[in-house]
Length: 116
Length: 114
Image (cartoon, rainbow over all chains, first blue to last red; front, top):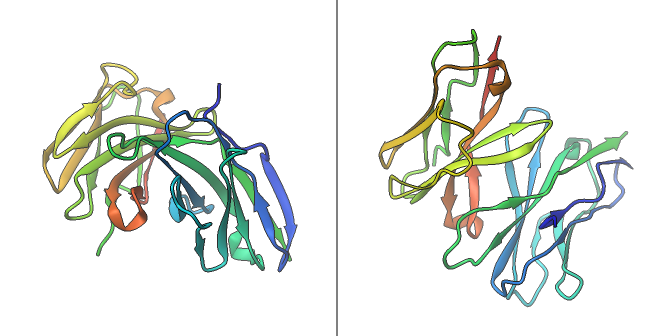
């Protein structure tokens, strides 16, 4: 079974609209972290936001927020007021067992294209 | 903070040649990871080190691949002999507390084997 599932291979969104990128995960470990990375066409991997399984509040970083629904095992990325520069691949990733495990499990990614 | 530094950015080589990719992690980071990214397989973890010691190399595709970390500030990934199917982007990343236990990635090396 997939540990990280990103169901949207691609999305087109009008500039200035909000965007939600879906991510569901599967783990039985109570201690885990969820990450979102952005990969623009230039190729670098850019860390966006992190959510820990014990965090009481949803993470936010500027225009990025993470809609964390623990019971549903979802960690959707929300981008407010999208910009042309947001066009990129977006990857969701999970790290299980935060005290002892240092590997990330990656989703397949969602290609986001922002239309002017 | 210079970030994770990889070299070269691009490498084109002929099949059968030896290829060496280099990585300098962020100072103070204890973990270093080598990834390969292709369209078909996505991001694959090849190997990772803790305090210069290889911890898990189960992702290394075959004996043609080897990785070393002789000190805390330098790592290499070597492919010998290279094959066209090794063409990919190779990323190095180090573990950074400032990203809440996520990785900081280098810019990657785009390898083309012809």
